[in-house]
Image (cartoon, rainbow, N blue to C red; front, side, top):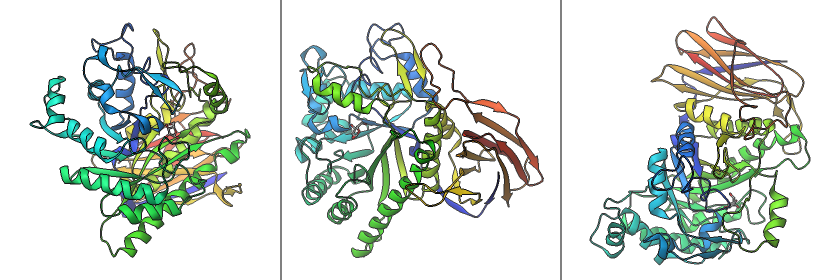
Length: 502
Ligand code: AHR
């Protein structure tokens, strides 16, 4: 099968915000305890953080990490995680029916984030708590000193404020499963008042209001319209979440789901414009897609286990083991964000360690890269610069979510400083190679091309502790420069990065 793709130097979408490659770490399962934090582990730093995990996160180069939840944040008291560790309370976490020892709180997470080379993106509790605890938390984190909460931070060992810029106004407040779930009108009012209080402290902070938990919610997209109507002048982003499932074990349907993601982004973008228009506003609100990933391998099993257990601390939970098929899906999802990078400015893979995550750890033992680590890593590394509007000519197939799903899913990024164009390409055809002609107009002449390929004959292939490199990128020599273009042949069901040096 053949495909033709044309990039033109003047056909651009947006300068990509590097926070498109953000991540998420929740107090959930083994994400924190025995994930990033494990005193006594052979690689543990004096503060108990695992150095092997820090190294993997550094390699992933995720510019921002959302914390501490997720559903967890909706019944979380941030004050439980400060002060002497031995005096911190153990609480019942109502979201995941576990015990929370609070041995990691904001100080420990901030130290970890600095070591891991990522900025903090913090969520406040608008479920069981509200405006007052949110404004105190912001003061604790961001005020230099001379007030009750900032002086307490100083007493607790941190003199300088952390100056956290991105703040989430709660989490998934449209979800009936959320502690303190609210109607759109109730939440819109609370979020607006909380945002006003935070802005009174510092109007340069970037605030994220909750949109829908997914696009099948009964309240979607009216939720967005109501919430934005109440908060439009105070917020910078609306948060969306989506998880991808393949319970039917049908690869073609699974890989079509990014079409639904694209429509979700397009619809919410339209709602933003509608509210902006109705308010005669010139202010822009963008999308923070701050939870996304494949999540289904262990999901039903986990829901059953949770109902039966007795408040364990840091149990195995949501530990999906990803396969090669998920590499293709993650590739298509990130491509969608790049193509929508004019409106999606922040996105966070959910999550980062152990819990539906690219990085896995064994308590007391090794850590390794799941299959999905690789497409995320390659995009985070090479997908910075200006997103290109590509003209794509390729055959398509019909699916449940869209009538025409192109067999070639592709995104292109021009990095003017590095003098490169990088294409991220997924062949969604299960039996045919794709011969792709990439034309690049008005970029100057092409010097070299490099092709990085992720391919495995078994869609179910996984990386495990004992076989950690089963699915991994390798160099391929299937790409050649032809005049002012590149010709590349990619195998069926494969993920490719094609790097053109200008
Ligand atoms: O990431 C797992 C959970 O998924 C988060 O806690 C919640 O926000 C979402 O429903």
